[in-house]
Image 1 (tube, rainbow, N blue to C red):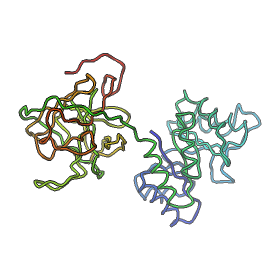
Image 2: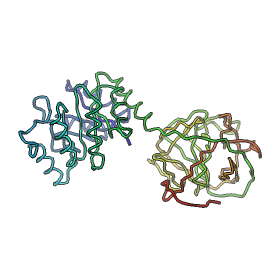
Image 3: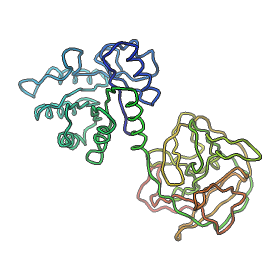
Image 4: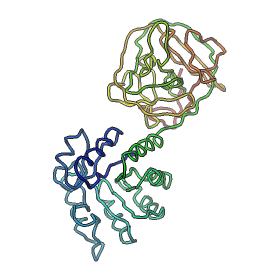
Length: 374
């Protein structure tokens, strides 16, 4: 998962505090700083990257003196920073190294540190794609996360997408608070997954008795056309609409998806599925709209109650899938026109949006394996 760190500006405390607070409000909770650890940690639950002893991640190469860049030794076989990084890792500390890439020698030092530290921060006054490509390619098999220092969202996109994989994260020292929000929006865009939704034809719909069904209340507001991918078969998940529409029976609850019974699958970040019964407060789920665009949401609460259920079966190009939903007027799927439609109004021959995945699932992960679901 891609991430962003904030390099706290070297300015008076009230201004620095404003930037850090804006970052936290935008979901950026890692802060790089050289001297305000005690005050920064009072601002919220965040991770501090600093040369100070009480840092969560110890920073090597930015000691608060000079320009903060690593000094190159006469021989790259040894340096104070390489030795310090090794000692800290040996003591069980998480370590980040800060290297300004100004020459081939700096590239080589970065590679050496990348085989020791947990995070490698790469800084360039005028980034060229080739040095970044070289370091990414050379360290791709190492257990290190690469963080590129960037000036704005445009540079961040280049860094995060270089060589398809890109860096794991970016470090930004913003000139104004709007840049923090731009980076946060970029991360959400890059992390979003696209789901190709197909119009499947309803072949069967009938009440089947009662069971334990799950309502998923999220910490996000969903709009018309948005919901979650849910189904009894992992290879075919229905787009179950949120309760974002008003009803003559109940008020809208745009944070909720009345998703299905406890055994149903629901799509979560990383292309994985989980059982609805497994979800709990603090977990992440995927919200998908009628065009297949997605975003992640935090689960605020899960409600499990016994309710009457409805069996829905649909078919697309010979692939037949089923799901179970609560038998109620407020429960909706999305039709082939992108419109929410109540299950009480669905009939055979109607078409609804379904996501088909040819992969089988093992503990929620997609794998290439033959599996029969019925």
